[in-house]
Image (cartoon, rainbow, N blue to C red; front, top):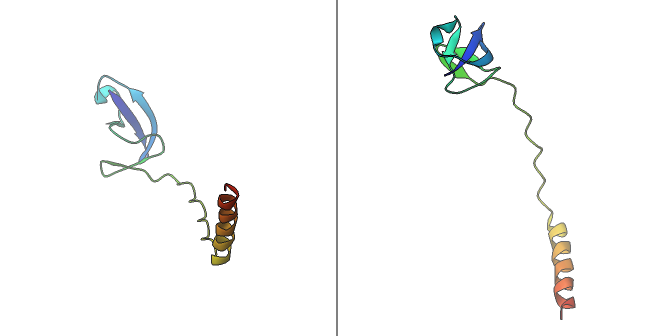
Length: 79
């Protein structure tokens, strides 16, 4: 079975064991991984998350009209 080694409330390693009695500080690794917190018998992902990308601003009315004119010209060129 897979087990997490917990030190000071943090998962520091994940290993294969036959029993959780193999050594102190082991909990069954049903979820989570290195860096996760172990609080009150629960694994919690408190690792820093990457920043979200900046949202793309919506096009202006003028930009959309320019795109429409360009597409209309392409369509008309098809004959």
